Amino acid sequence: MGAQSSTLEPALYDRDVTHFAIDSRDVRAGSLFFALSQPDYANNGFNGDFDDATKFVPSAFENGAVAAVVRSDRYEEHRSELEKYGSRIFQVDDAIVAFQKLAHGVYEQWNKPVIAITGSAGKTTAKELTAHVLESSGRKVLRNLKNFNNGLGHPLTVLKLADDPSFDVAVLEMGMSTPMNEIARLCRITPPDVAVELNVLSVHVEHLGSIENVAKAKAELIEGMKAGGTAVLNADDPRVAAMSELTKGKVVTFGIKNEADVAGLNIQTAGFGKTSFDLRTPSGSAPVGFSLNGIHSISNALAAAAVGHVFGMTTDGIAASLSSVSSPPQRGEVLHFAEGFTVIDDSYNSNPAALMSMVRTLVDGSSAGQRKIVVAGEMLELGADESAIHKQTGIEIANSGIDRFIGVRGLAKEMVDAAKQAGLTNAEFTEDSEQAGSILSNEIRPGDVVLVKGSRGVRTENVIKALLKSHKLEDAEAD
Image 1 (spheres, rainbow, N blue to C red):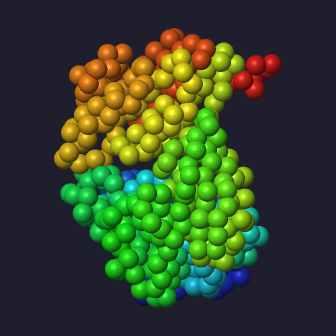
Image 2: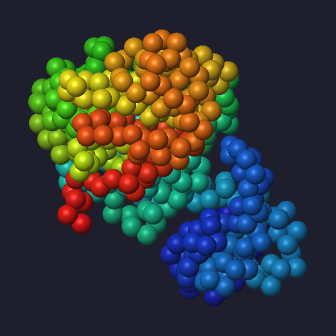
Image 3: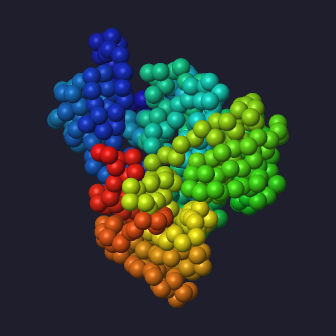
């Protein structure tokens, strides 16, 4: 933990650390508690103001912690409360760095393959698809819970290996939102054997300044890859394709529009959750029946297929695995209501490309005569061009063939106004997702098909909650 650590009391050698906690509320018997404070967060690329956890060290010990890791300066500030714990406290220069170094040490002891996935959109879905494909080949896969993809969630995931080293492979998404080399830091914890780059979009431009800077930040994954590893690159994204020049190993490409090693061909949509395509890899071709919606979801599936190919799976085996995938909650999940309307819940996140991909899915999957409704929240962290991007998206929505558009919060007003100017008169702006949910719940009728899409900060999942409160799902009709 660093040269400033106090000497371990002899009794501590007889007590096993069985758990690692960065939240005092998660501490239990056997925990090693890391007391994080504002300087730790600021030094490690976290925006915002955070509570000083040093004050929770006494309660952590009361709850059974074996030891605690505390910044030396914070220890001095709290010496009167902490010195009674003596050598059960390790003093370090930076508690987050200590936490990450510990995770790296656990990773080195485990010493098995890591697949790291990044991109401006689709990381969590691609991670889940990749894990699903590899699990179908009999491998035990460690993966991030939810989207724990930052400098704290990532080491928390890796530290599971201390308790259970039986995993055969790790599939870990790596995120970033600042210019502080977040992905490079994560690669130092677990250098990837396979580095997957999904896309570079105008997300986090607010913090990084330009899409070129976003591309450089995402490219840290390729630069941090192990020598002799494999870069899995999206051939349809020119900024990603250009990263082949940075690789220290092999390159496998995936794509739909451009020539690629792993390709999706003959894409057909028969309805929501009923997409089919031909998967082609260097080993052959096989048909896939795919339950996720949108071209962007197929692209994520191809990234997963490329990883399966790298790990020696057959094309038939990969195709069979992708055909057995179920839509995860809030990521294109199709909800059929008893009154005869259908809702696509894609409220987990949003960006312009993914929004328009799902709008096209809505239009293509609807039958003639069905009313097509889009509920879309403002898109966050798009930088200086955010207003223009929202206006252009509104025009594209108006020209897509939908019948009703409800924009939610903030810059969604730019989308609504632009859509109206482009000829979609049945467009409305709401201040928040609760208002949007109330409007939709009151006006929805049998035969309607609805897309709900939004960034996490807009909480468009509240639109879904409003619908579920006032209408029954098909399977719940008998309840």
